[in-house]
Length: 103
Image 1 (cartoon, rainbow, N blue to C red):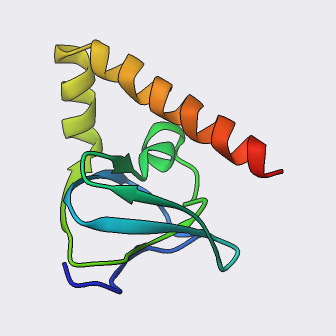
Image 2 (image 1 turned 120 degrees about the vertical axis):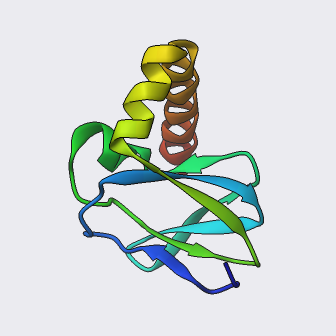
């Protein structure tokens, strides 16, 4: 995916999450870049978990390779490998703590 590609926008309906194999993405809230994620990270998981609209816009900041993980694949993954759920919770907690430090 080329740099500058919007993966999804704040307010969009979310039915999947993404895994970033290569590259970097910007997490943008209210037009402000609040975070950057590099290879090995997931994003979009909140909408997949709670069914709410996207809370941020995500845009590639350089050429990136990204996989889409739909709801069925996600549910199969966490049922076959329960530690994945804990890993995702730890990641979400870390992001929340970093955002709290900005406030």
